[in-house]
Length: 173
Image (tube, rainbow, N blue to C red):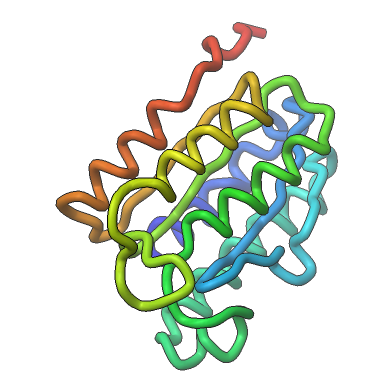
C-alpha cells in the first residue's frame, strides 16, 4: 500500500509529461479471480482530470488494502488466494484489445501465486502458461512486477515475469 500511495502522490507533479504520453491505464485487482477496479476500468491520461482520477484510483486501492484482509475480501471479488494467472489473463486481454504499441503490465503483489486456493500449486505450469500467453498475445511488452514482502521462490517467479519485457527504450522526445 505504501508503494501505491507514494506513486499516487507523485503522479500530479508529472501531469504535463503524462498527458503527452498517450497512456491508457486499466486497473485490475485480484484474489482468487481478477476484475477491473470499479470507476478505474479504463483511464485515458489525456487531461488534468484524468491524471487526477488515476492518482485517486491508486490511493483508493491502497486505502482498501491498508484497511486489512477482511475489508479487502468484502470489496474485491473472488475466492481466497493470490491468483497471478487470473490477473495476467485479465491484463493481457485488455492490452491485446488495445492499440498501444508499448503495452505494459505493472503488477503489485504481496504474496506468492496460490491460484484460486490458499496453497501454492505444485510445479511451474501456471508460470509457463502466463509466460506463453504473454508472449503470444503481446509481441511487444513491458512486465514490471513489484513484489512487496515476497521472498524465495515467489521472488524468482517475479523475476521471470520481469524478464518478459522486450521493449526498447522510450523515444527521447
